[in-house]
Amino acid sequence: MPQRILQTVKKASYQIGLWLLLVGSYVQAGDVLVTVDGIQASGRVHAALVSAEQKRWPEQPLRQQYSDNAQLQLSDVPPGRYAIELYQDSNGNGQLDQGRRGIPLEPVGFSANPALLNGKPTPRDSLFEHGSADTQLHIRLQSPKAKR
Image (cartoon, rainbow, N blue to C red):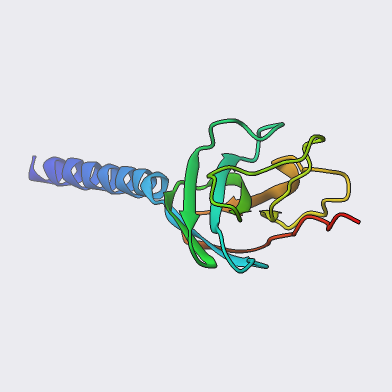
C-alpha cells in the first residue's frame, strides 16, 4: 500500500510541475525596447503597438507609449507578432499632422524600417516577432520631403 501512495504522489507532483512549466511559459511577457534614430530637435515621439495580423493600422492600438527622448519601453508584452508605428509630434498638438493627400508632415517610422516609396506600409510589412524575453528594435524616423 505505501508503494502505491508513493507512485500516486510522484505522478501528481510530475503533472503539477509540467502544468506550472506550461502555464509559466504563457504568462511570461518581455519588454519591447525601441531605440529611435532620426529624431528632430524638438517634439515628443509617439508609438503605437498593433498586432501584425491586421490588414490596416487600427484606430485603437494595443498599446500607446510616448517619450521625450530616443528610447521607448513597452512593458510586459506577451509573445506574438507585432508592428509599431512611430511619429514625432514636432508642433506638440498630440497628433500626426498630414497633408491633403494623407502624406505625413511630421517624421514617421515603422518597425522593420520598410521603404515608404509606395506610401504607408501595412502592419504585416512592419512586423517583428516578440518572444518571452525582451526584444530590442531600432526604428528610423523619416522626415517629410521639403516642399520645392
